[in-house]
Length: 167
Image (spheres, rainbow, N blue to C red):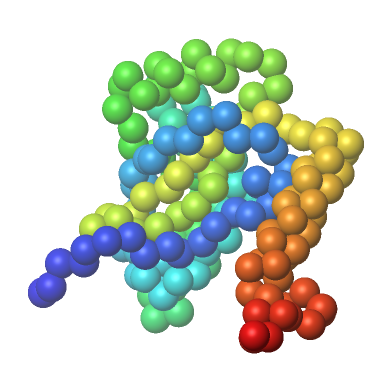
């Protein structure tokens, strides 16, 4: 069997980047059942309601929906079960130290295969207020407008006639 190389993204949590300001990210391994891996290989998962927590010195992922494998039998998994995350002990101590701050939480950003192994990228995040979200949208639209104007200027599509060809 050919070993997989590279990174294949299964699911991303775009809403997390909108609702939270990301402070730091970590890559974690996942403890999965066989039917969960097969379902992920089909590219089916949702991170929308997911969050991570530290309990009894271990890191757990909750609320992530991995649908049942269609060809699974009685060995199928529960779609929203709590899954253990695998991190090094020093990373776990960093996580717990940063979570001590008020308003911080752990959210999953993406779920992917890296060299054939399932990984999840979690982030230490702080919730945004409504005015922060509006401000982020304004700055993003302003950046798009600046990029649009500069690309028009460099391509010569400004709407005015060009005098380059007059000699």
